[in-house]
Image 1 (tube, helix red, strand yellow):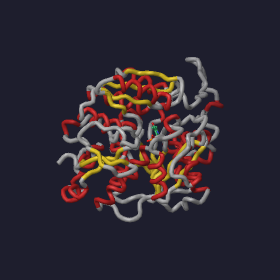
Image 2: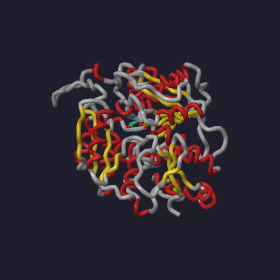
Image 3: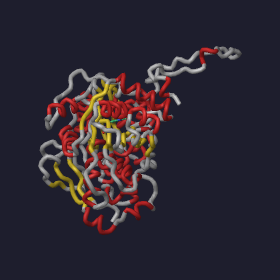
Image 4: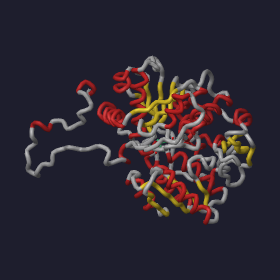
Length: 419
Ligand SMILES: *Cc1c(COP(=O)(O)O)cnc(C)c1O
């Protein structure tokens, strides 16, 4: 048995849908969730057996939807490092802080997980093209994985999306459109294009069931890397929310398999204060979010004013007694610089938001400092080359180095944090 997938389920009503053909959302327009025969998996697979498999996310193939090994489209994604952050952790008062670093994955962001599984499954079920609106990184990942699968891709992104993601789509032969607007505007273009094309699938966030399955592997990996123990808290940036919904789903599956025990980790959804619909909803104790007006943040990947899966993110946060936090662009940029200066890790702004949030939660007392906290870095800083204003002096070839130039760095990182 390569996959234990049995069927799909409406995330609102539990209504059952067939998994053996291309599916979008449920009749209600809600995301569909993949379900597996977990009893069978528990009876036939052990954690020891997984330990002997190749270090990619496909090591969990029984818990993924693709039906056989030869249908897997892979660029080697998964099993990214779980790093200790001794300097940053002790500075913010959470010495047990770890980083799951998805900057080190094909295409440079954790969108690769969703694309690997989503493209594999779409191609297996007969799609000849995939189409999506994106804030950049998802489009880049899906365009590249589609190229590997021999499937066409149509990508629409805001003209302001990180420039390099545009390049990635173009070089991989995607049909690319730049939209003068936000991701929702790009979504309208995609819906209209898909309606006109045979065998193209709309793979917008949570409008097909399998991107989520790829993203959930982050949680399998970090639990396995901790020796099949769960941390106290997991901190995740939330845009469309697939990451955090996937983590919650994966933890539930591991619990049902009997591979983890005890209370689930408290899940923290992090947004930028310039686009924080989920945080606002959480503060009101609401089950769903309201569209966030005038959304704007440097953390482009989490600029999602209203997510289709908002209720699933809020469910995950409430059910685990977690929380939702917003951080300002200034705070997340400071965290980005501090992590680079003190830990040698250049994280993306979305990932940096998590680390700013950890500091904020410790200051406010939500974290006591004794917890083991895993924060997700969802991408590599080099995908945003213009983010850091570099102010190094340009010297003539024979120029002497002026004494004042012994250190060119970020003024917002205090000397005390530099080792
Ligand atoms: C898309 C993205 C996010 C947000 O992920 P969701 O699963 O949509 O919540 C975070 N970080 C980066 C780098 C992204 O590209």
